[in-house]
Image (cartoon, rainbow, N blue to C red; front, side, top):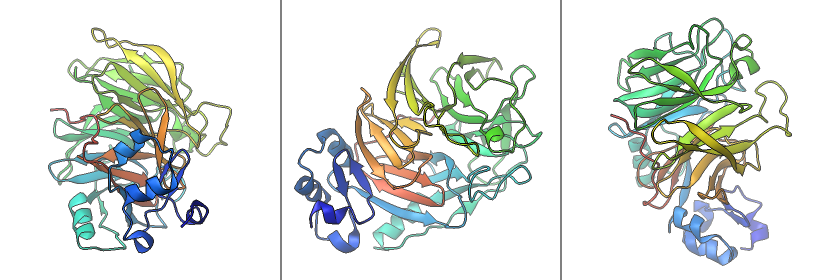
Length: 377
């Protein structure tokens, strides 16, 4: 089969100059690495090393009427479950000013069992969580953090944006850690990562206002740092139009911050605004964030959630799937869905869970690939 024939089928893995379809019904007898080398002689070897010899990408959960899988994916190793949240205020999200969004979870053990049984059409159980009213319009998360999910909530109406810890086991107890900046409500808390010092870095961008479920913002869109031991919160980075996802490299000397300035929520998108991932140095003694430079500009949509793998590559949920850049900012390849993926989660050796609104995908790549450790005790 020639490349011109391949491009008529859904694409699941893509690299610059590469279109492949690992369709089980068409290519059961073709090894993925042979398919790659047969059609794309100039495929970058770095992306091949990420994919490994038998890469796959499977749809494992879907609901065409509900954007149940939008953001805040957190893998809990002890239970082998991935938590996530539905779209807050967006299309098919079933949430708005008068209705909260919904957190849910899937079991990767159930996914593995379905794959092991040879099930072709997988749609695992999505379990909804009944949570305290303090959890409103969840959008970001990381962890486990001291055994809990560390979750960022945008707030809704007069209910404030906040940072909470959620026990990942029933009854899912919630503890509010932070809900104001010296008496002023945050705009819509978005994403979060924890530094080994114990300080929590998080982004705040007014997407709740842009999606009509929050009042006008009281603060600039900014990146903050929070010391949970002392209660001190301070601005870490300003001057980013719409700071969204953020991620540290393995030695925490660099932090990457995604600017989704181009994405307007329910306001019009503006393609002259940033769709840029910036890199900054992190000073080891003061944790000051300095030396901003462009790391990458996204070719489709903008990078929402971002994470770094153990090889230093930066992964981003973008307008066509999940894209991967090397540490120098060179685009290596894409897990191409043909539609947006706001976020994803590394889930141990060689496993990645991709959220795509009404669908969840499960990628199996080389077993050497893992995310930078996000477990904080």
